[in-house]
Image 1 (cartoon, rainbow, N blue to C red):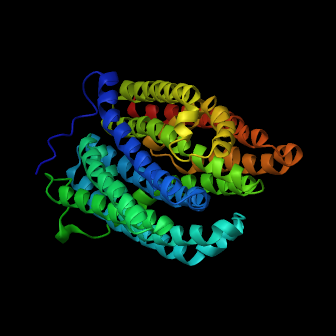
Image 2 (image 1 turned 45 degrees about the horizontal axis):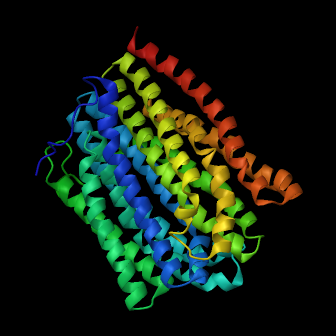
Image 3 (image 1 turned 90 degrees about the horizontal axis):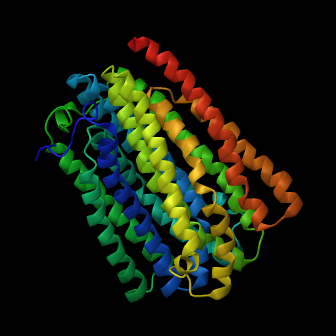
Length: 450
């Protein structure tokens, strides 16, 4: 099996190339969101509001762990794309084999950490007593999928660096269909509730990981996986970690602030918590679709930077920013128009839907503005700079959000005052990330010459 579905990111018209690259990623990300939503939808519909609240109470924590692995995978993507653009096959092969080992052990470490500290983390969030047992059961089972999720993000990063975004979509489609079928089987037939949807997720994650690893083993060199080459190359390890670790920590630290937000949500009654859980599904829907264009940004910029094509580097950023903003805006309009119908997918209780609409309407007016922050971060990463964007996110989003919770939210103590912190933090952080990217761009382009 060859890698014939990949295409060059350094030649041809940029806009159609970015769209062609991003569309499979959009569908891949949508599938991941929809399959995750199926967990909550099946639980909410067939196991009741209490089970829905239990699974929803873990959402921020699950996103923290998965966000770390997605960030690690994006670092693999940037490093691999750079060497592909520079036409250095030996470096590509060393990067691929080193990255697999790094990602696998990262996923294993998260499994151990998450399983051991799940009770403490749930208590830190202030998870309500009535939801605690189900939330703990769901989270501990879900953590067994972390190694598989790490391996899939490794494979996705490698393939997308080469321009192949279609095969990850195919593998996710197959694994996702299995996830939905197992959700229904475990919850409806076996009555397993939270444990059932968690187990279904784990099994489907190992399915997608197995498929992408088998595919990579059959790819043409230098992307092909070979057991004889499976070792850590020290130089590549340092390079991958210099981008991947800050990117992973950036995502994780970003969601640590969201743990405080979840804690603030948990100060309201159970109906508001359940409504927030249902409405929060829109976050993943929007972020992951927009995220396809961020990956396109870093992949195109990294390959073209490696190839020494200055003008394509600049245009890659501008086009990706425009496309991500438009995508976020389009989905937000749909959510504003059909918010009630969207929430009814997860619950049939009118009071929970009304509670969810409070969050949904404020967030839908805000989502698109996150593109300036995230696309600028991806662009800096594409140029090999990952540490400073992480620091900016910590200060502009994480620290700012925590301060907001203990000041503005503490004063008003309304759900609206809580949700407004998103657009303010995106505006502050996005401006700082843009200024840093422009600084990096000028520096790196001088190295390529005029």
